[in-house]
Length: 251
Image (tube, rainbow, N blue to C red; front, side, top):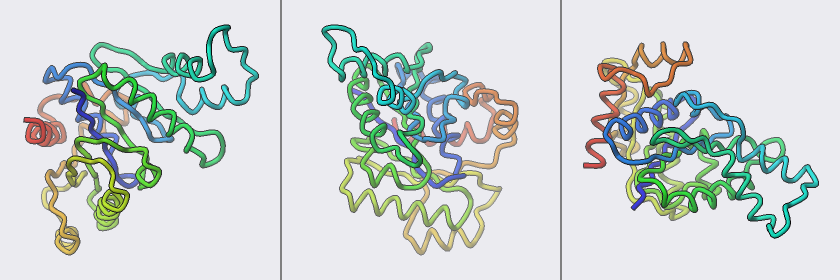
């Protein structure tokens, strides 16, 4: 049975970092094959995982619409599109990656979102875990891109605005009645102590973080040097925090 984990949050919250460290935990603990899904049009999950991307769902759909493609005999458009999407799947040992990319036109990601969701649903049975890094903000939720999720990790950076976005995302999940089994709040990039203003805002919004992920110089260094976060050492404070989080959620 596939377990689906989605990561959401405002831009700059470090959700891609959290998604990468979740995947690192799953890989290091022999959890079975993992499908990583970069559902953010500003795709960078592949870089964080050390996986190169040649095509995206968005680029394939754009070329499919723009070119007068000669579909091979005996193939429907849907079957041919599925074949092309399979070509965009980046495969590696125990970890595969699908990247949404940008949509058909400026700020138009709706159709790629729909295709991506259908394709991921078809692929999911082949994996023990699906980890989805969603786009910044709440657009993916309002379009119902994120559905049937076992664990929704809502990430805020160490800011009052980030905490307020967490509350807004939780409200949208409730309003749309999305199929999310469990939600967990994570505060990222935390200094040695949470700022009193953030504690006050969390209290006001009745939010209790399940985990705080500390500021980690190693994460910044790996990002700067374009090194995969999967290679971070076990001694990394961010790695330890996410490992503890995932051990609590999955065990």
